[in-house]
Length: 403
Image 1 (cartoon, rainbow, N blue to C red):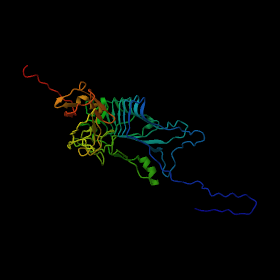
Image 2 (tube, rainbow, N blue to C red):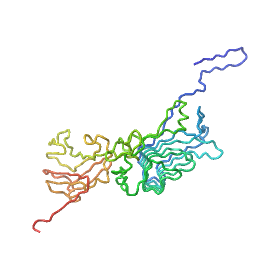
Image 3 (cartoon, helix red, strand yellow):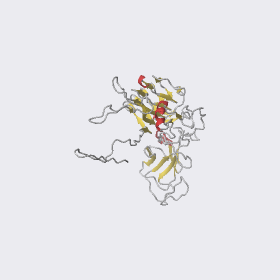
Image 4 (cartoon, rainbow, N blue to C red):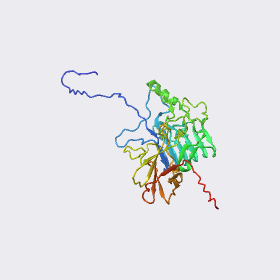
């Protein structure tokens, strides 16, 4: 730093200060990410991204226009919010509203937010994504189902970019903007979700949403021109490597991947990737199989032998994504399918009846099945066999031979 000392003849007052004057200090710019959320039954929109107040309160400085840089920014684009891997269903008005500043006539033109709406699943509502008041998002790889209008863009947001979106049971896929040539419109009978009626939005086998995401889109050219002279690299819009459930987006070998989807072609559209190809496993947790205290006298897995112990219940926990059968993170058990009629209990080979011999309870938070005998305890000196079925079975009873 420089030190400046002023000297002169007497007769005037001199005040010296070693404080800093104006300086261009680095100001790191962050990014607001809204990702990995399940949002249901909102009164209006599930997510609203809108401009703040134009004028600060009190003596706070007011928000200014875009900065004048070496390369002019006539589009007034600035980085906006990223919405990624969100599941929004049954909203009153719509899924997402992306809005900017209205910039009324006679007022200073505000910045235009360049948001990124990538790999979201929106089910139900009047509109899937509403873009208005000078917003300019890129809307990529989203799924819209059972909405009146998929994407609605007002005239002030005409610079919005679409790519790789999928629509089903949507009256108007897009309003105020043309669909991209990568859009997919499904018929009502085409497979999409496993069971949307029960809230299971895992992709159904053979769905055209599988392995059809666009891996990346280039950054906005107008913004690249502004950033490049300042040494700021382009920032392409990329599909996420993981989905809402934390699963790595991987190939579904039963589906032929469409050509020209980018460098990584094994990403599904929407928030949840069809990447879990192994069902959950069941583990007996009470009594515990092969416990550390040695109470289980049978070393085999799934077999427990106890001596003179009274049990008030059997507890079985469901796990998904467990080695060695399923090395990847699983999507979890579908709680709607864990029912009493999928569990069979036998005592010394004779079937026991739910509601007569025992009660069935399921803790959906911890994925634990609890079987409680109506007598209060499970009788000792018997062999109990518990069978779990992953599908609806049939019980056939033949009449006695003397009839």
